[in-house]
Length: 221
Image (cartoon, rainbow, N blue to C red):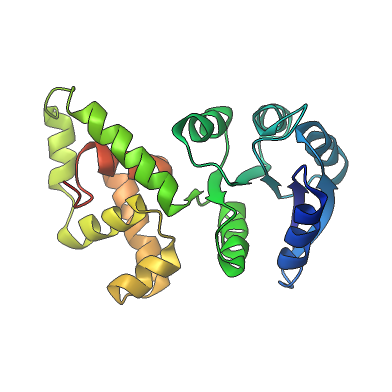
């Protein structure tokens, strides 16, 4: 059972999210918080697996909550669920240690899938969030020198199929979506990503997405 705490300053949204997540028999909502401080206190009391955290809340906002939770309970995953995908808000969340960042416009089933994925250690980011990251990285890349030899050697070990998967990861797709896009088994996608991370000496799919965009391997101009 995945234990979840929901933090949002709007009561009807907290209740709505609880109703959505409670549809899944593998998820139990163990607490509702109105701000980052309440979320932190519930983590102390309930020790959830995942905190679903809004970013902009009066008083103790999401950034405060993420930082405190990650300082005291690094094993707890924090998945941001908000309406804002501007670079400043995304950077604040990721910089404090958020394990994922999705938007409230996401379909109910995808919110459930995102909670499960984050609980299993998968970094989850919504498509528009990755679009913003791609634009930023592309702009930075134009001001940076060419790739060094070591990076070129690593990229040289990547197969065409692995490049396809990297591009889809950079678009914010999860393993199930990538499997459907490429007509592969979900386990095959998982194995591919593990091998890619090993080849490129990266820790997780967030680093993989950034590496893909930075080195223009995502198929975007």
